[in-house]
Length: 99
Image (cartoon, rainbow, N blue to C red):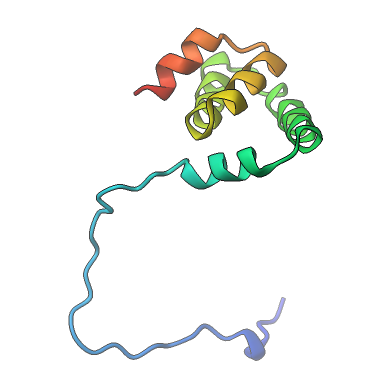
């Protein structure tokens, strides 16, 4: 496969100091929660059904619970519904989400 020069990486010249800094309040799951809450009921159900279809293929219960806990952190209803749809222990999900 040959590289297309049209999509060449951008080279930006910098002057001054460049610094990496930890974000003080990352709110890692905020946008996912906002998106979920903006959906109508049918779209929420479709999303849960689609996610559950993939998560139900995960055989390791710890991995599945960890993944569902991320959705729970985004929105409690989101995680609760996904836990039910994937037969994942909701108490374990809530405990992981609190960490």
